[in-house]
Length: 307
Image (cartoon, rainbow, N blue to C red):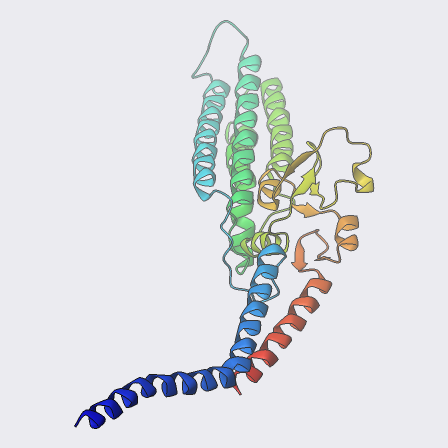
């Protein structure tokens, strides 16, 4: 009986040792596959890091946040406040023209010109707020008509602020003083022409264009001057040689400041594709090819690890 007990004890001690040996053998056999999986994971991490550090390739999901839509909303509200005041000035100008308002301390012509000038200033200031808001939070250009109307709301309001006045002066009131009619029509026509020119957005930004620029230049600072209309990716760009003061920031900030186009020289040196208006249309060619090569290597390593 004693011997049996001893045998059983030895058997119980031997079983864990055998299991340990088997597990070790399995681990050694699976080690190459595990190493391949680890290498594959490292490659995937490398791709993810490259995508974060550089511009994403085409068809990358849109994950970039727009440039302060709340700020854009407040600017649009301010634009409408200025435009409503501008229409009010137009009504006051009509009342002065027909003699319903007389301020006494200045002549009728001076009053008329004063209200028209104030009308012009309010229209233009409102348009600047509207354009800045559209650069910060643009709409899609999928509907071309809506895109143009939305970006040129300042032009529409300018027409509303002066054309009815011109129609009344030239065609409705037949008994007005000819001199007053001539001065009023010329002043309103000049204000209308200048207002349209200053209110129009000659380089509108689309939602797609802003997102493409943000993705292509993600993590990259750009540079611009106070009065220029383009931004640069290279601080040493030849077009900046005469500029003593530069502004630096991300591309969203540059576009919100009215710098809607990428410098053609910088685009060429960085191999970034742009359209005729200077808007970015594609990421750098070298980066796209590099990411595609890495992706192919990762796919091959994953296949080998799975096998």
